[in-house]
Image 1 (cartoon, rainbow, N blue to C red):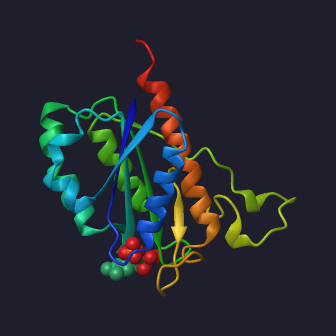
Image 2 (image 1 turned 180 degrees about the vertical axis):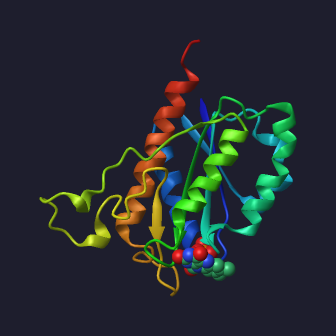
Image 3 (image 1 turned 45 degrees about the vertical axis):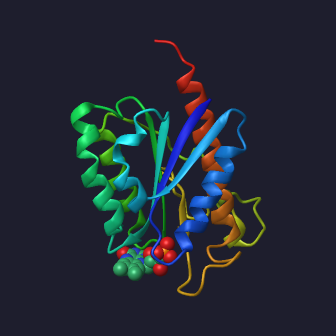
Length: 194
Ligand SMILES: Cc1cc2nc3c(=O)[nH]c(=O)nc-3n(C[C@H](O)[C@H](O)[C@H](O)COP(=O)(O)O)c2cc1C
């Protein structure tokens, strides 16, 4: 069995919808199980991730980076860092914010640096921006990777209640496809030989 942890923070529920889509995608791959935790829960159980094959971090972009509970979780990960407990695991991340850009890429970069400090291997989206194709004639907000996040999936939510269209379905599809890609990569990496 391949095991993936999804560790997310969501202040108002929008990023949680993205996290659930990543989970759904990962669980669509046979032989993969997902542990789904908030950053707050995960911080209190920081020693329990030594046996997972990969960790996906998820956070809204708050003031141009991850939200404080995710940063607190990252600080707590200095314990596994000392033991090199996450070394050679796969890592990935996703974010969501209010503006189309909103400096989301800095959030993903923050996560990728943490992963690098831990000696982890980062999984990109591998998804082209569907709406950039001259053949795409659907609604922009339904396009896969419409925000062009290659380091990790990006989503954009209006400052209204989370709903099936907030964040939009294109961003949810993107998150689902990322979960699937990450799970396939973890399965392949876990069964690989040195
Ligand atoms: C403290 C705070 C800081 C924020 N900073 C940014 C930002 O830097 N860029 C941006 O585009 N949106 C920003 N936003 C908007 C949130 O990213 C957006 O509302 C997001 O959907 C919240 O996700 P959540 O419901 O999972 O908390 C900020 C919101 C809050 C509350």
